[in-house]
Length: 104
Picture 1 (spheres, rainbow, N blue to C red):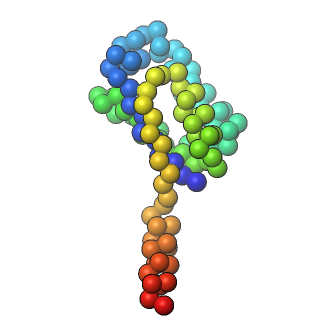
Picture 2 (cartoon, rainbow, N blue to C red):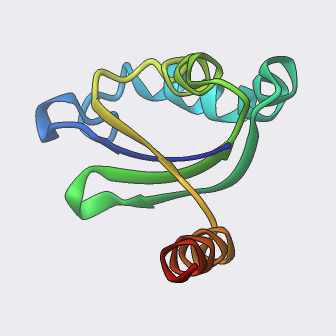
Picture 3 (spheres, helix red, strand yellow):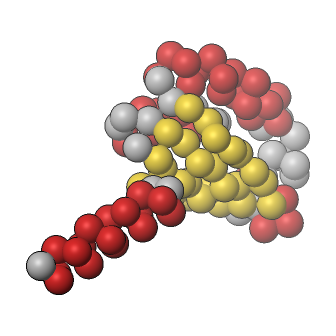
């Protein structure tokens, strides 16, 4: 299952301005690949928008628990919104099935 996460933090809680936080945050980023293997979480992308203090992540995992453990491993107090998503091809297939069922 795919999960899209949006993570935001405040300027007051930003590692760029709280230099004592940066080593732990950087270490957690370096450890994400290994943690993903341990939790069976595949990271498709992890992007940042520094001016907005926001990150956008696409993960693949069997459980929300694994995704939560993966994201909460980052030692940064932030708001995290996790949404299950699917590929457009899957949505199109479902829409065609619904349309066919409605016609017949």
